Amino acid sequence: MVKTAIVTDRRYLKHFAGRAHPERPERVRVMIEMAESLERAGLDFCPPREATLEEIALCHTSDYIALVEKTSHVDRYDFDADTHTSRDTYSAALLAAGGALTAVEAVFEGGADNAFAIVRPPGHHALPNRAMGFCFFNNVAIAASWLLKRGLERVMVVDWDLHHGNGTQDIFYKSKNLLYVSTHQYPHYPGTGSLYDMGAGEGIGYTVNAPMPAGFGDPEYLRVFDELILPIGRAFKPEFILVSAGFDCHFRDPLGAMEVTETGFEQMARRVRRLAAESCGGKVVAVLEGGYDLEALANSGRAVLEEFGREADEPLQNPPRGDRVMPIIERALQSVGKYWDLA
Image 1 (cartoon, helix red, strand yellow):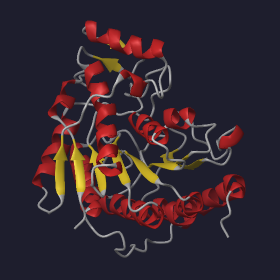
Image 2 (tube, one colour):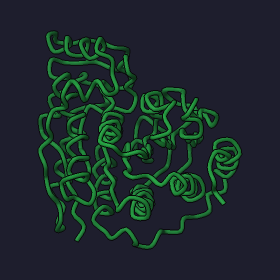
Image 3 (cartoon, one colour):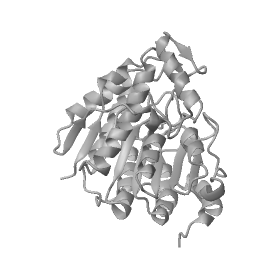
């Protein structure tokens, strides 16, 4: 029986960015209700802990952390046109980072096979000294840094959110200990994540971007996984895999123009789990990022959680060929692929 830890808390609903803001409390509510409705053995609901300031400081500057804390003393603070706080945002952000850490702890040392952290606010746009894109602390980057501090040497982050995770890329851009791979609509917010963003210094080759135009869906995404992400992942041999699990590349999402379905998310999750089974005993943690259509969010989250409950050797679905994405894959292999032994 596969054991999955679900880390979440209704305190995440307290963060409020505005009445018309797409990153609204209902996102977590529908995900919690979906998770509670699942009828399978092996689910373990775990309350999150708050991240400590020392853990937040693994990825963020002390001045920036102090600035976010100050927002808890005012009704509203605007970091930019999209990123707003309420008095509860700071505590929710500590709990979101702590939720990712709780999920990692459950898999790393607590007996779960995999985990899903249903948290908000999201994190993958947060830079070391700047909030942006609805994000304040970079939940996945903090969890990855925690694992590296615990002695792991190879952590992989798979980011299938609609938007490029510029914050995660920036934090690890010069590191050879973290492989960051991203599929994202391009050009689109935040405008980063080109094929030629490949890392720097010791980290050259450890940033892998698959920027795709609007209109791509399951065939293209799965072909990117099969012909780019998985081969490089196998060459890297991760000891732990984190997923920035955004569901805003779903065809119903109001903020994007991609065509991924629930089956697509299930099959991406299956491929990640297959890689994890081959390289690190199945250790995978997904952390919620975007996804702004409530029905699509809940249904896609269900597809991933159900996949997390299956054995990792379930057959891969063979998608339609997705030939439109081949020029992107070929250019990626010509650029970043040269840093890997893919024979």
